[in-house]
Image (cartoon, rainbow, N blue to C red; front, side, top):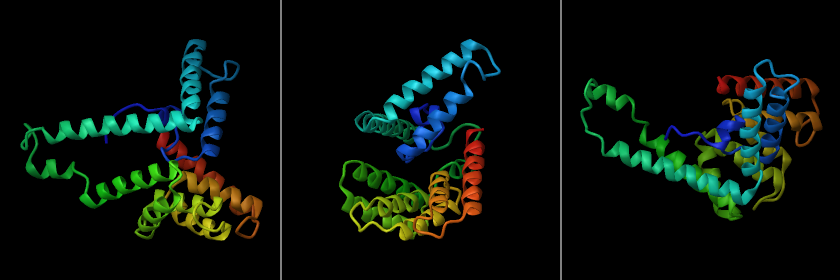
Length: 217
């Protein structure tokens, strides 16, 4: 994957983050870098807030977000093409070391399929997106499991089923998907699709926060 800075990085969210998570991340960052609370310089706080505001404006707008996603994929394709043109035997690396740096083909194909499903879902082509998400989810793909849960949660292409949504959220949450952990916590707190349990809600809220902090470091 290309080493590029995106609006998702600025808000510290994943590319498949739902609007609710983006809003929560934006609010948390604004509080952290508020001039009255930030421990660093006012100039740094102002710089970060400007970046956060700009990124939020893009990711909260469906059209702008789709354009940003397209730009990210374009940069990644360019980086991939450059890597393919690199010599087979890089100086200072053995063949085994070079092989170790290449992702397994199955993982690569899964990510390509997931991105296709994500784009289809964003375009409102729910039936096609659902089919691909389901295929990947059954193979254990955490992000696909989360998105499949969202589709059941919102009744996209399928009859709305909160219990089924919880089932997929749980599978993804247990693999460390922070979006799924957050949504699962919300479900336990509201008692929607699962028996209301404030202790489990607190547990998954805490897990989501811990995973988010770990990924941000």
